[in-house]
Amino acid sequence: MDVIVAGDRAGLVKARHSLGIGLSGATLALVPTMGALHEGHRSLIRLAREQADHVAVSIFVNPLQFGPNEDFSRYPRTFDVDLETCADEGVSIVFAPSADDMYAQDRQVSVSAGRMGTIVEGAFRPGHFDGVLTVVLKLFNLVQPDIAVFGRKDAQQLAMIRRMVADLDVPVSVVGAPTVREADGLALSSRNRYLSPHERHTALALSRALFTGARGRTPAEILGQARAVLDAEPGVALDYLVLVDPATFTEAGDDHRGEAVLAVAARVGATRLIDNVAVTL
Figure 1: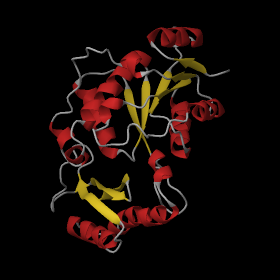
Figure 2 (figure 1 turned 180 degrees about the vertical axis):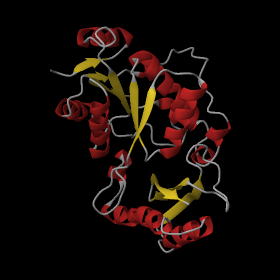
Figure 3 (figure 1 turned 90 degrees about the horizontal axis):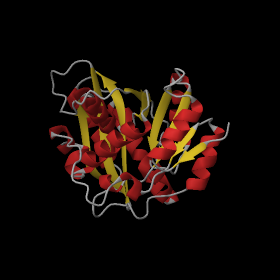
């Protein structure tokens, strides 16, 4: 079956009806993206296909989650190639709205990420998670999926979406998918294409630091070992390196037991990258 491309609510209603979603018991999984699809996105789509009868992929570069000095205008937009990728992966619906389709000019109401949206990544990108949660809630309302799949590379985003779904009683099951990496350890990201060959080599320090730190036995050891790797790479401009609770993203103290997330954000050249690994204490 060919991919159905929808650009607005009416198109989605027609697509759902033609596929029997919500009528014959057929289920739908949503993979929200900003396009520039890579192997990491393919892995999300494949996981989504295991979870539901049909998969919808949204492609929308959301202006609300970009700050004034961030890369919204140059964020890669490769729609034709993305559509081919979706067809290759058996996607049923591609939802590709314009900004005018998504947001009214006199829009007043949005989602507040609360205090959790102001720490770690939120401290460096004020308002970012408000924009993320607003667009995700709108996508949930428009596409009406049974399941939504998000990558664990954006661990704080995943935690905040789960919190929004719980706090607002959104009838969507949220599934986290493992981070996909290159053979040398670099986490796949649409922004990797900004890196020069030299910068890409430098960027390997991020994953190397995380995997080195994860071998530690205490929070102090974990953070100390990871920071030592980053300190040895002068081309990495560190924003943060933190060990946090995976549900709240508050600091994992010396008495923390169980799962934790070791997360890093840094600039390599003009490109800002994030990564994380799970740690068990």
